[in-house]
Image 1 (cartoon, rainbow, N blue to C red):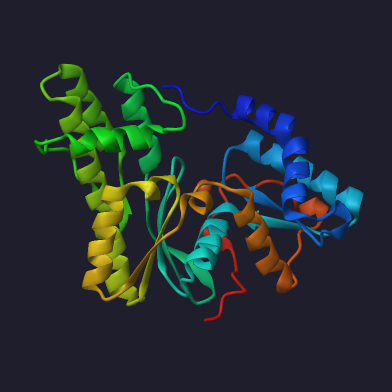
Image 2: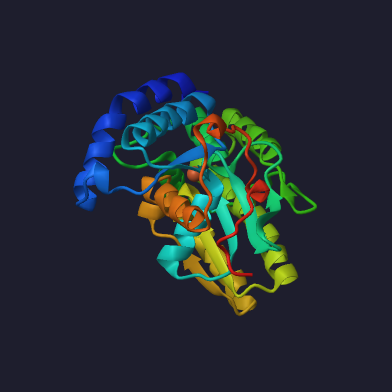
Length: 298
Ligand code: FE2
């Protein structure tokens, strides 16, 4: 099926860590001795990759003798999204290769209102694109290629629509669309179009129900799949119907990035939260709602 090989990715992380860190210091115009904390992504994610980051973070924190702050990756997406869009208290839809989560702040934590029960939406699109023999072109991820093909689609092919309570399932949809691809009765454009329409409607339905339930006044879209214009349009419609502001996190801060980890680390540190080295083990399945978000105003 292709995709990321965790150990190879981790080797790559370790190889580029030194250069990346010195470039970050250069661009920020500060020296390592000026740093106050070292924030790092403690989870959730792929073990080998998280460990490569955590090792670099522990080394730096020990060398500079400054505290470590272990950050939850999903919290970081939400916090940087709020910062750059000026959203105060949104319903967040975080959609990427590894996550599909609808969340909102309630009683001290970012609660998960709905999530995928199997694979993430971004992963579904990637697997479909690979099965279709599409090739990642320069700078264009599979999602963007599928989006472009979908625009040429005319016929909506029936695919499994799977919303269970507030949760989502994409695996049946993926199996069905790959099967249709192999039997060759539909054009690739129609299948891209139908895949997007079905999957994005599911995401939009769950987001809208969370919005109606919580009566929040903002909808925040983040993660790599958030760059998709069709998904943006669907969410803009429901935000509008509920008189909520629709905020799309710019790509630079919507894809995984170091700034989001740093920012979430700063917010936690200001509340006195640090992570002793002996507690800095990575947490592969660290859930968003397990984090006490002390820095968020109720
Ligand atoms: Fe992410």
